[in-house]
Amino acid sequence: MPRTTPPRPLDVEALFPELAAYRGTTTRLHPRPGRPEPTASSVGGPLLWPADEPWPVCGEAHGGACGRRPADIHRRRQVLAAAWARAHAPGPTDEERELLVELHRKHRLPGGAETGPLPMIGLAQLHRRDVPDLPAGPDHCDLLQVFWCPFTAHGPSGYGLELHLRWRQSWEVGRVLTAPPQPPVIGADGFLPEPCVLHPEQVVTHPYADLLPEELCARIDAWEDALKAEAGQAGADNRAEPPLYQYDLSIPPGWRVGGFASWHATDPYPMDCLTCTTPMNLLLTIDSSEWDGGSRSWRPLEDRSGRRSATPTEVVVGRWGELNVFACPEDPGHPHRWCIQ
Image (cartoon, rainbow, N blue to C red; front, side, top):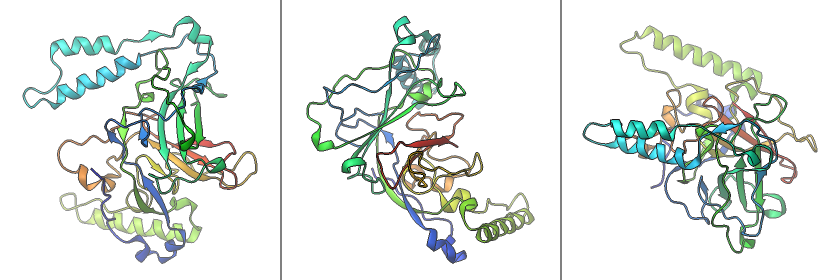
């Protein structure tokens, strides 16, 4: 089933005509649980990976690390979903609770895995044929594959992510790897995605307000303040949340490709290419949820009836944030950069 973004609560370019010069597009991926094929764009699905090519690994030492087994995480999610979907007496039974406790038990990495290379998790793959805002990779590659290490134990802080992006030409893949290696345990459940099919939808987007010209940003702020004051005067009984630029009119939530990054957790800072100093473009946003209380107006029309989960991928970035990955527009072969918001 396709996913359709509702019309915006108002036409922001009619209010601020200057915004038309900054208009862009982003492709909302709308991942939803399913059974993607290796040839399909997906989150958490089987990858179009050559059988004779080494699988990406994390070379950091993970001594003393412990976590949950991938099969246990998947099984626990299935038990919980089935228990709460029951029409009669929803929720886990006593027997299911015992199973859930066992499935949630942590295990240590085997001795060899603590110091040796650890298989990365295949997070997503995206074909240009499916995703309008996905740029071509180096050498005109048409397929982007994304991996990450299932532990936050990297970088100067010792708590950073280890991300790996691989571009390839899909037509060159011959025999496909059918049983990729898996890490024996995973540091946090949110590193392990559930298999999801995608329903790409291209929508209009506008930049984060603080990156607009100062005078325009100030006018948007003043307009929002006036809306909030008007809503406050209406009283608690009649007050409705006014549409705001950040949450309703500029940048959609959820997994998406292209467009503009949100800087809601930090002030904006330059994301320039470390090779050529060119300002980088947003390539991909990996989000912990498809919508939340502040961005509910972006909830697709098809998801507004029944119990629709806002976390179909089960991926969690940091403390329920989003991971923005950037690419160099001058040379897609230059190293990517990323930040968490």
